[in-house]
Image 1 (cartoon, rainbow, N blue to C red):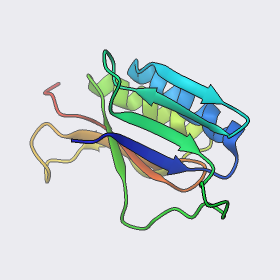
Image 2: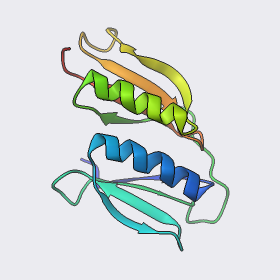
Image 3: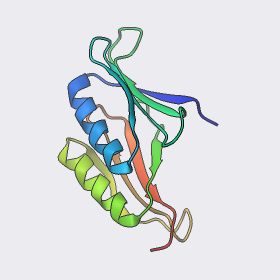
Image 4: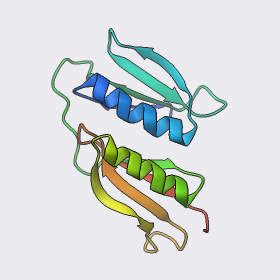
Amino acid sequence: MLSHVFIGVTDFDRAYNFYAALFQALGLPQRFYDAAKPWADWNAEGGARPLFVIGRPFDGHTHQPGNGQMIAFSAATRNLVDAIYASAISLGGVCEGPPGLRPQYHANYYGAYFHDPDGNKLCVVCHSAA
């Protein structure tokens, strides 16, 4: 369904450190990194797409996170959700909802919500039973 997602950042090095740790934990490989642009991306395991790209906005204006927008990443286990959330917070992320069951979505929905250091809202979720 998706080709790619581009997330604007203000401090590329800080954002890169944040996302590199997140995607390493998820086991998603980096596809490219170019500090001169600056931008970097990661892709789905075993495929070219979808891509997740971070960089400064192409129009040169300051990045502004959107209200009501969120990107959710799938994790294989609840323990991985916990670990990624802890890593995100330690790297400057801001809690928007700690790891836990959210039965209002479905019985096995175990997720954590946080903002990256630039204010972009993210979720890591496991849909499997414990």
